[in-house]
Length: 294
Image (cartoon, rainbow, N blue to C red):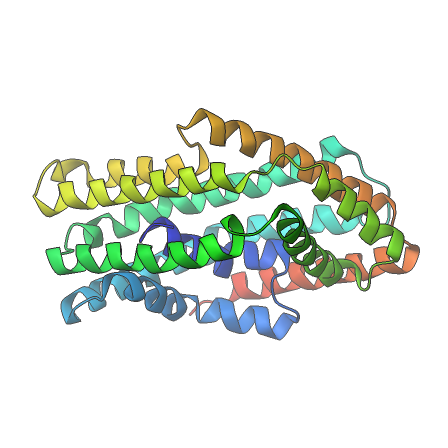
C-alpha cells in the first residue's frame, strides 16, 4: 500500500465502493460516512505523511474540491448503476452480465483515480525529507500486518480467511446463507488462482513506484509534469506492468464473476428480495447525497 494509492484506495472505499458494495450495514451509516469522507481521508493521509499546518490547509482544500466533484459527477452514475442492479435482483443472471457490471464499477473508480491525481499532485510536491522517511516507516508497519493476514497463513488458513470475508460480504446483501451456498463459495475459493506471493511482489512494486515519484518531486525534477505523473502512478494500480500480477488479476475477476453468478442463481426468493431492497436503499442514498448542495 502506498501513501497515495493506499489512502486514495481508502477514499475509494469511503465515497465509491461504500455505495457500490455495501460495506456498511445501514443507510444512515452510509450517508454519515460519505458526508465525513473529507475528514476521514485527511486523517488517513496524515497517518502516512504527518502534514504540517500549511500542508493540512492545502490537503483539506483539495479533498473538499474532490468530494464536491464526486458528489456532482459520480453519485448520479452510481444511482443509475444501482437501479440497473436492483432491477435484476429477482432474476437469474449470467457471468457476462455480472462482469459487465463489474467493469462499470471499475470505470467509475478509474474516473475517481484520475480526478484524485489532479487534486493531489500539488500536495505531493510539498512533501519533505522527514515525511518521505515517515512514509517508508508506515510502509514497513502496514507490510507487517499484510504479511500476517495473507502471506504467512497456511493454504487452509488462507482459504478459511477468504471464505469468511466473502461470506460476510454476501450476507450483507442476501441475509444469512444456507449451507449449500457456503459450500459453493468454499469450493470456488479452493479452486481460486489467487497467490498471495504474487500480490506481495506487486505491493512492493507499488511502494517502490510511489517512493521514486516522491523522491523526484522532492528534488524538483519534472515539476511541470506532476499531474501526469500522478495520474500514471495511480493508473498503474489498475493496470499493473507486472505480467504475473496482471494475469492473476484477470483470472480473479473472471473467477469472481463466476462465484457471484453461481451464488446469486442459488439464492431463494427471500434472499433475492433482501438483495433488491438493499440495492434500492443504496440507490436512494446515492440520490439523496447527490442532491445535497453543501
